[in-house]
Image 1: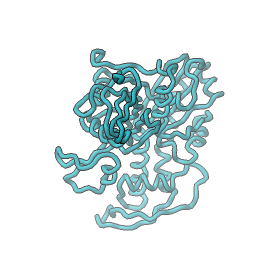
Image 2 (image 1 turned 180 degrees about the horizontal axis):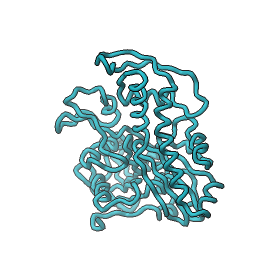
Image 3 (image 1 turned 90 degrees about the horizontal axis):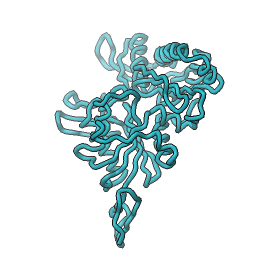
Length: 359
């Protein structure tokens, strides 16, 4: 009988048992830890999975993880906290982030292989401490003996959207995520300029809540704000829509039902998108002219979960004067890029191996 090697894919199926039960092999995953959701690509299953990056806890006791925890968000009693282990694209709570990832991966593979390979999409310009956090998420209490590779998130996005990274006179990648927006310029096989601003989908949700409070004297939760954004948010060709919501009257403190206009919802969204557009214009003005010229010809590559708002590409185009290439991958673009890297040896040069000794 062959002896399994950590450097080779070997699958052994014992007669009379299911494949899931007795598969012994080195497994490979692509992982994108986002402020809103965790995305995982499993090579052996050739499938990507997505789940909310949230934990519900009562003191030190974990009540719910992932989508189940999100269902409790803004609904749970005051003694139960519901939060994300990520903040503005960075790991804020290492222990809780490992629990979310482990819980999700156990759903994908009931028996996690020892010594798996994990490719992480990570932010740019991380400190040694921040890199160590990613390594420890993959090699902590529950997940162990895993080899870790890191791919800069804008590179993963670019690969997913088909950008030629090496023969490139200059491309711009914009990712509007849950809590932040990232601008990156790629040329000659590397990122030469990058900027992150703290505006994303959650800030849009909060801006919708703020507009509703100002116009209707009604306080609504950010989940309700998000629902209004997804249902009525449009940055062009706006319709005369309205939706009933229940909130708390700002004066009486009592529950009240109100019909919310799409105009009010879009005013909140535009406050955030206008700021993204203004920051983008400043960013573009600092780019060398020859690179800006190529970006103008090619168009700016736009992705991220918050780009689902209809007409956001045309709105930003009118604001900045540049055309946009809107990806239909949205929040899954980085994990799609990791999938391509995992399957293509030529692309693996963009993945940096991380060991404990390097940290």
